[in-house]
Length: 490
Image (tube, rainbow, N blue to C red; front, top):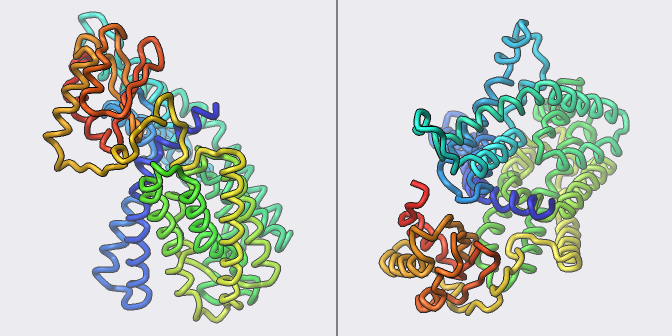
């Protein structure tokens, strides 16, 4: 199960990689709109570009997970992920449910108004990847041959997602509304209630169900309406804003410090790759308060860290609410909204949140670093070394290659492919961060010496039909060239 979660975590890196850029576009755009002009063309242009990505996380995750979890990371899997997402979100949206129940849209359970979320995206991607792995090589009778193989996968994904949607039709409202009721129940617990809200808000991020709690505390579902009241400077100073303030120390300081801890504990040969993801995600978290890129980088790879992160978030909200330090956000708890909230009259000692954030940065760094090392957690840059990977010549493996090296890469790919036995012997071509992962029909037909003659650092036979070739950080380009040569499944 843990390996499956780690594979899922790695598959999320494709959609997650785009989030920092989207967050920064939104942050800069909002800053321009609030500080310069509400009608700024540039501000609206930037926020629209960022919102196009951040408002469609579900579909991005559906496609990314489908590709990442499929054996060959084929485009057909991504298409199937999109099909699965469209089926679920169309059948279970407000108008779809109204049609199924024969009622007015206004009478549909509010849970279905929040169906387009990351959780549904991940489920869609998983279903599509399962269908790809099961049906992408199936041959149908001649009369139906057109729909054989990869063309069959989107069809089976749609059918499977109809079944999953039928289950969600009954389950989703129960879970969603239970969380709304829970949120309403803890409102009276004051600072403790704020802490519980913060804990469950983060804990529910992977499922998308955090929106159920947010509706209770941030909006007017239960009369709290914390965001609108803060910006209107209504309510009670030191109280209004308590369900927002505690997020600032986490998003601006805690999570960036966690990213630094993950970078410092990454393996030497993977530090550059880990840094490219973690530092960009950390900046997005600090500047805009968009944390998904950072959180999804470890929530599946190291779930225990994510639980700790949720607990620390709850503690932060409890502390801020206890001391009545308040600030607010309209977008998220990053530097942009923090700056904008400072002159709001109802804000109470907001500068203390900076002090709290610095303390939480220290806590996050040392707690994350200790747990990662002590428990050997597989955070970015600490993935398992597979047999023979330790033999990699790091000066070679860490050498940065670019598409400009196309001729050299193509030659290497052709030689490796020939050494594997070519079309007649190669089943599948896949890759991870430094290795080609290959399936062959007959291992006896593999010429390891010919493969090694290309200059690769290592060749590892890991099963009766499985072999890995350690290439280095240019592995993606080699794999792409080999996929072009691979005709076996066409």
